[in-house]
Figure 1: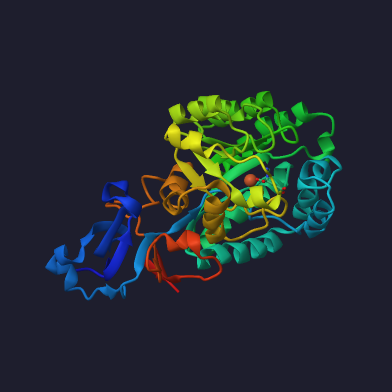
Figure 2: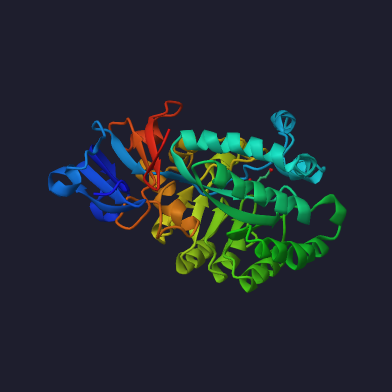
Length: 406
Ligand code: NIG
Ligand code: FE
């Protein structure tokens, strides 16, 4: 048997494959991978002798899960906005800070001023924090450049994170995140720049795997969003959307028309929107960190999402303004306490459904034959413990494409 074969025994598997029941659990299991892909899994007693003879790893009775996926982050940025947090605690709202020229624009200035190397070293530290929590795939957005050079710089940094660290990176171009000061009073002019200059450059250098827009009263209108989506479509890039976070502009129905991968935030999503995304197979990505940090009160329509069978993902939305929380495990807990998800739904939200939100569900997100052997071994008694505990890191071992990470 060749060196590229990996085998682990004496583990419980939380495969997250619904065909095995709750958490896709297989107690007293074993798993085999070859050339980075899963080739066998099941009860240990059924493990073929050939595999047992290669000297398998002893999982010590712990739980093996698919590597966690953070499917919505803005982890490339300069500076921080702790002072705005202080202002908000004195009663100034997130939207008011943005309108007064703070918010995203502050981070834009700091990101423009930072060199590629400075941004990279900050991003690597943040990504390592996620890796330590068992994250094997992360999505990283641009959107703090708002000019062509800085947007490209951010995306290059995001790609480099995936080259320098053992983590899969999916990049998303979010040029239409906020209006840069140069285009004050001229949002349509800026959207033109996004569509006619930024997007073609991004596509030419293969720097983005998807395209996102902040569709909101303090972001861009539904029509402006549509223009960006049209261009993305022409360039063959899938779309996703920051939608219905602070109000309902109907962004989600638009994303559904473009077969969007996901709509994210969605606190103000209504039934028509839920219905639309259920028909387009779009994932609903819930971002409890931003809800918590902005002290929002309007909750995403979780019951409707369940009723229409919409897959729900959970992510950190790690960013300096609305969610400076680089902790995916905390999001599991918050998804349950704040949005009333079950621990199983929450875990599905950072595995199977997060993979779907990135268009990667044929490759990662569950322990299944043919999928990548991206795995994390956790010292827990049951997978429900992941949403229950916080601040106790149960991660014992991690593998990316069956390569052991130390
Ligand atoms: O996902 N909603 C827009 N974008 C970010 C916030 C960005 C910021 O405040 O810097 C979000 O919440
Ligand atoms: Fe975001």
